[in-house]
Image (cartoon, rainbow, N blue to C red; front, side):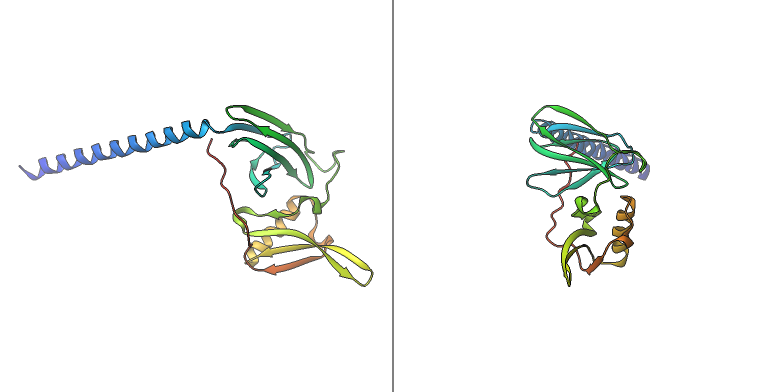
Length: 199
């Protein structure tokens, strides 16, 4: 057998192996999608402001961001609080997810600060945990000589994450210099990130 024939046979085996691997991966994804769709419901969330950040919270998990503007997610059956935030304005709604059912909600939120929608307090948006738990913004009460006052607490491991937290406050329509802010330089603790289920 000449070297050219050996090379052709090697390429054919490699091609067959690639096809088998691709078929196995496709079968796995199909089985996972079918089994997942059997235990979940679908929720489509649309915010009237396409720049709005969408989050979802259930009774046993912390709030997590699911996207912006318009998002579809698969969720296990249960009750969820879905919220949209943009430039300090918010809208929220409780939705019940049932197995094999598609739900859709539209959250009406101000598209600009001149709208008549009531502006929320920054404190009502807290606690907030940044993407990948890089930072946490929370509130606390601090004793003073004249009683007590609310303060913002930013926990982050790095200066970059601290600046990202301040940028988030700005993105919600608030000026950080209007608040008393305490900085805690450490990684966000006791946070369990749960990935969304695939669609």
